Each structure stands twice: as structure tokens, then as C-alpha cells.
Length: 185
Image (cartoon, rainbow, N blue to C red; front, side, top):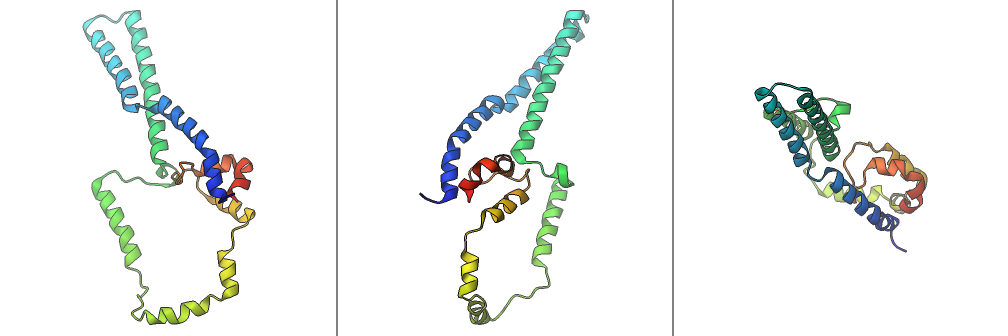
């Protein structure tokens, strides 16, 4: 049979290819999809500077603005999905290089400047760790998780988190859980 997760990944290869093709056909050249309506609107607005604004020019300008608005919406959607913009839901975004540098420095200072002392005598680790895990505990630690435990873990994942190693995010697993849960467990 094989590992359940491997079998699930094999089953998901075809939908993954279909979704990838759809993504390429919908968003493939997002920069070009934005650039063309923008240039078109610029050209029409330049014509309105030279010529009088008649009803035809006004209508063309409105249509061009609508196409540009749609392109901008698609571009925004693309980038939101591409980078899973978690900051929209949880807080602040850093855009200035100094803000990014300060945030990064504070993050690592908090990690490495903790008051926990590093063990100097590593033989102490060898003496105590093997005694902490007996055969019964080792069996419990190496048991496969139950379907209930997996379900709890899957639904604790953030919908906006990054995609997994097989390009399926938490929202996919949440939405299709009733269908795929037996394959995952």
C-alpha cells in the first residue's frame, strides 16, 4: 500500500496540474495584464488633451478605466495569494528597510538573549536523557496519531499560512477534509 500521505499526494497530482494550468491561464502574465490597460488609458487620456472630449472619447475612457480597475484587482489578488499576506489579519507590515532591520534584530535578540544558560557539561545530557524515556513512553511517542488527533491538528492550521510541500494549503485540507481524511490518516 504505502504511506497514507504519499498515496494522498499521488491522488492530488492531477487536480494540482489542473489548478496550475488554470492559474497560469488566469494570472500568468500579471504584469502585462496590468500594463496593457494602463497604456491604453494613458493613450486615451492623451487624446482627450489634444481633442475635445466627445461622448465616444468619454465612453472609451470609462471602458479603459474599468479594464484597468479589473487588472488592478487581479494583480492585488495575485499578490495576496502569492505571499499569503498575513499582516492584513494580524497587524503591522514593515516596508522601510530600517523597520525591517529593527524588527529582525529584535526578533533574534529575544531568541538568543534569553536567560537560559547553556549546559557546559554535555555528559550530563547523556546521563539523564536515556533514563527519562522508558520503553512504554517510547511506544507512546512513536505511535501514529489517531484520526481525531490529525483532525484537530489540521483544523488548527491557519487558512492563510504558506502552502505545504505539495502546494496545498490549510484551506484546501479544511474544505475537503471529509473527502480526504481517510487518505491522510
